[in-house]
Image (cartoon, rainbow, N blue to C red; front, side, top):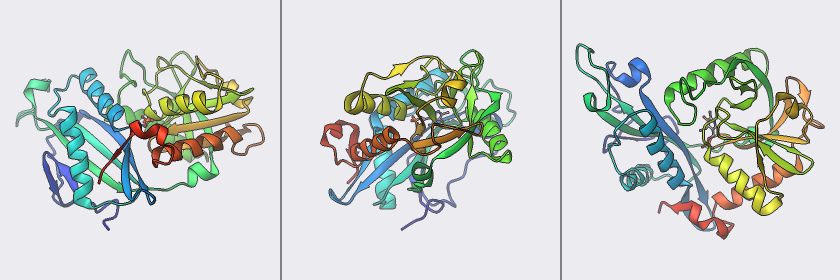
Length: 312
Ligand code: PMP
């Protein structure tokens, strides 16, 4: 079975070896970060002997939203993107939990690089890469976070709503700083000084039984896992989750806090700025949400059948 690093790559319509999966040094993706992507998971079910893509349709929808905002012309239809994902997985014969990326990027704009790299001046290209990934350490043990000294990018400069690769330099600065200072990761405040999100995750707290999370206008990525957790809490735990601006100190006094995202899944937040969240242990509601999430994503809870797509 190919490992994460050695899996085949889908590159512009062909499945190629990792050695062949190269892009040009003149690519606008390399030169100026002109690239958008999706980070997607698929979950293996022993019982059903199948691999399920989790929420592939919302991911493809957001891929198109990212292309629209970043003024990239879609090179394929939604169905063609989905077919490419299935083709890539089957070519690698993956039968285990996966995390992979679907990237759309601008390639070479010509030898003199004099063009404005608008959509009609460059080639829009696609690759899919990734592989087996089921590291559950953070989900099991939880994370200790700090509030970053870096602020989250905002919609009036570099829009965080969509998944542009260049946005990740903001999260990288925050994440690296956090680790140098002895934390697992960082939370970023937005330009209003309210809580935005993590470096690759959204944040939620529980106070007196209510789930609270910043709104989609708080300089956050419109996270698909965030939507899932909101829906799952509302349906299985209740009451109706609250989306509103969040202060940093609300996390200090919360009963529970968690981060969520496709890569991170649902992980407990144990402390913020070295102040423990409640007793500094994963909360009961966080644990319950993790159970609900995995039951849905692995095809155990059949009420989530519309959110999973079998690969085989
Ligand atoms: N915020 C940021 C900045 C992210 O990079 C991610 C991961 N894609 C998330 C939130 C979570 O989004 P999703 O649940 O769609 O993966």
